[in-house]
Length: 501
Ligand code: AHR
Image 1 (cartoon, helix red, strand yellow):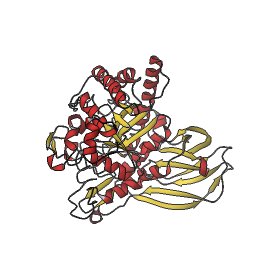
Image 2 (cartoon, helix red, strand yellow):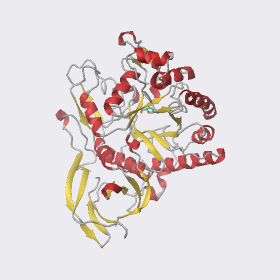
Image 3 (cartoon, rainbow, N blue to C red):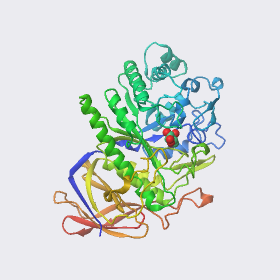
């Protein structure tokens, strides 16, 4: 019989709203045909900016605080200078990450307009593949400088008088990966990134630098953190989980992320202690999601059609970030539109995938202070690994093996001090069983009688997907209801959690 214990005095840390960040890469239909469609054949785009108004409006409902750009793998052969100035002069280039062509019609200034429209902060990933430190410094100057210097003046000439003040800059993307243009060893990367960091901070000391990590499980992370701890502000890690057609593997997958975060925190602490540094280096989980690259290869645009099982996996991912609020300060779902995304567009409209709904619930409701939660639950006893995308995985280790991470009932909770409100996110990952769950709050939490607001994502079948109207519409979405508190002793309530909801 499951039970959830929550005590509002057992606080972990404030939930950083930046854990609900996004990612827009030049890949597939994320930028072109996703957020940007300047030909405006169907009147869905803003005629001045070419940005898709319908897409922006749905993204706005997620209150995305930061967008990472322009890659991903794309950035490692990207020449940012091609994407500025008059559009008719922008060169088309071969693109080596996804083996396509880049028109450069969308570039830095268009991205900044997008972020401004979204009321979000831009986060730029630097090209450490074909790019030089000179290019990186020029990009930073173009974006952030108010001086009377060449690239700052070029920005003004392009119609943007005021600097963009881009705060977040990462030192390369997945530089450890064999697929990356300019792959390096951890030692070579660290030496180079250290020099880049020093120079970038000389030009703009206000920026926050993010080191390129692996999955958190790798020696890469240890080496990089040891060298870069003095000069970086965040350490990034990436993990994608994959279902392999098995629901349990799908929903238990995010356990790997929870372990990865713990290991990264230890590696960071070790690096800081060894260097005698009194600072924090939080985790920037700047790529995460459910992605099966065999089903949805990047070269073909990585358009996944997510089902209810995937939505529950995404909810479990988000529970991890809330539970680890003391360590993870930024997380970017990869990606924001069309490409492994909760939103799918066509030239005439869009639909919200199953995974949109848990993301929306978390990004709008799960704020405040993360609470330590104790859960008693039946445990999944089957195989849990390998459930990660090859090379973006902890190399087949039995990371999901800890029983504690394989509970069918997965929970996070927050306390909103000003409202005196506790919000609980419960994922019943069990494929067939409903559970009546007592939620016990502890003697220091006063329970006020009345109604509880419940937002439930449920559908009859784990395989249910969403689509455009002609394709069945949105079967999986949030239902809102108010339920009367059923008391459980003097300190708790009882709630019936439906199977796979
Ligand atoms: O998000 C898709 C790709 O996955 C990114 O470009 C890359 O960084 C990762 O391998």
